[in-house]
Image 1 (cartoon, rainbow, N blue to C red):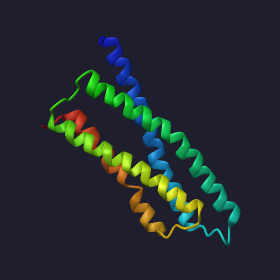
Image 2: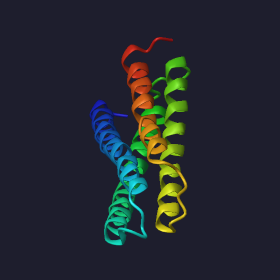
Image 3: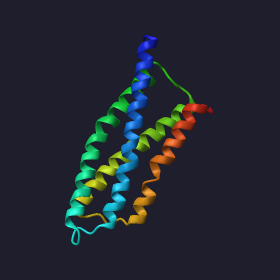
Length: 146
């Protein structure tokens, strides 16, 4: 494939990943706020936060899909990192991030059904997972340690 196509694919991948991560960072923060609000005492605020979460999750899904698709194109179409240990670590982190994204959707469903039993503190810790995974991914891509 052409070098120009490679560079455009890489550019789109970086933009999609960055945009997806904006959602992965913000959605659990909304969950912290939802965990602080009781639907019985503050129905309007609870419903507003659930609505915000739904819209953000719907916005994140195509970004995650495009980030994954462009990443797969770089990996399979251009052979980037094939057989490299750093790529295996990165791909494991990507699988965990996709699972995290799915988990955010399940948590949203529980909030929408008013069945969430997690504490505000739990959501604060949960909110840190994508930061740690992003750090590992970026370190693998930049340093290619093995």
